Figure 1 (cartoon, rainbow, N blue to C red):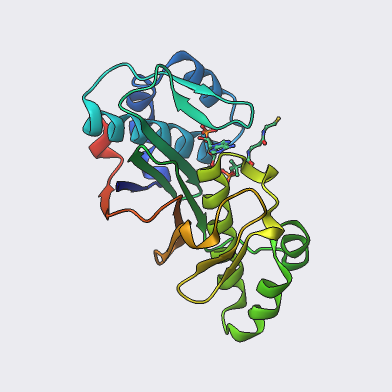
Figure 2 (cartoon, rainbow, N blue to C red):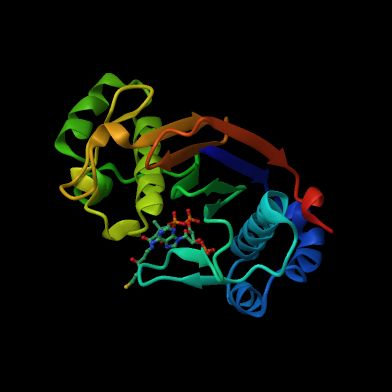
Length: 226
Ligand SMILES: CC(C)(COP(=O)(O)OP(=O)(O)OC[C@H]1O[C@@H](n2cnc3c(N)ncnc32)[C@H](O)[C@@H]1OP(=O)(O)O)[C@@H](O)C(=O)NCCC(=O)NCCS
């Protein structure tokens, strides 16, 4: 299984492209875009969904892609096409799309400027082993963000989002590896995880088995305009 990762950095300068990209989205996406209170959130949402369509076009040929969300909110192609699975993430300054055939994937990006509340994160998502390991990292905040993106990417690959019992997912080491999963989620050793520090953001990719290759593409917002 090959995994495609598409990354696009986004700034306020890209607002000149947003109207053009909106034309490429469907009515439901345009309606959601119209309801964001902040331009920043609208911009990253629109770019993420345009990037997803761009990635799907490259994988399977251009067509009017349609999506349906399941009970957990995970979006799927409707109708399905070539067993293509995807995941997307949008945050301040960066959007990411991961694509694979026949294997669920998860991607998450978080801006480094975010200051995680360690106590809140520990009670929501961290295993005791992960909290104990924090003392071994000079950049404690960076480690917290790394753990968080990794858990979100796994949660998206599984499809349960934050309903996954995140404290029972145990991630250790550097590079991070999956040391334990909750009962019923398969052997920890089969889960594949990759985290990357991008200089401004943390990125994580997750899949139920190791890909044979990760094809990494960095595109500008201008690249996505028709
Ligand atoms: C998925 C989730 C972890 C994402 O968090 P986030 O870091 O705030 O945001 P990101 O930008 O990284 O990811 C959002 C994208 O994840 C995808 N997504 C949403 N729910 C998902 C799920 N259960 N599994 C996989 N992907 C999901 C969507 O594509 C969404 O983007 P979109 O709304 O623009 O289409 C979080 O929103 C979540 O847990 N959602 C599920 C909520 C839920 O359980 N709903 C069911 C209620 S019954």
